[in-house]
Length: 80
Figure 1 (cartoon, rainbow, N blue to C red):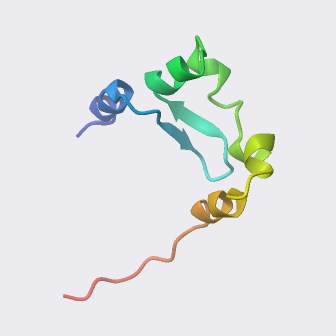
Figure 2 (tube, helix red, strand yellow; figure 1 turned 180 degrees about the vertical axis):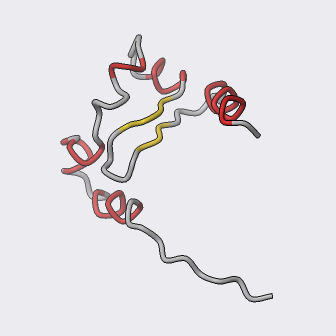
């Protein structure tokens, strides 16, 4: 699947989707999340919104889980 096709599929999902880089900065948002938050232009979010700087996330009970999700995972060999 090409990156362009994947972007079209994700953009058409009825579920809000955001993709962040390892620093927590938004690098992709789909149409649904923009519509739900009344954001007219993805460029208002991409490269500007950082999940680790959002007071609603930082002050939440699940902030530690968000931070944990961004930790690099150790690769494991599959045994066959």
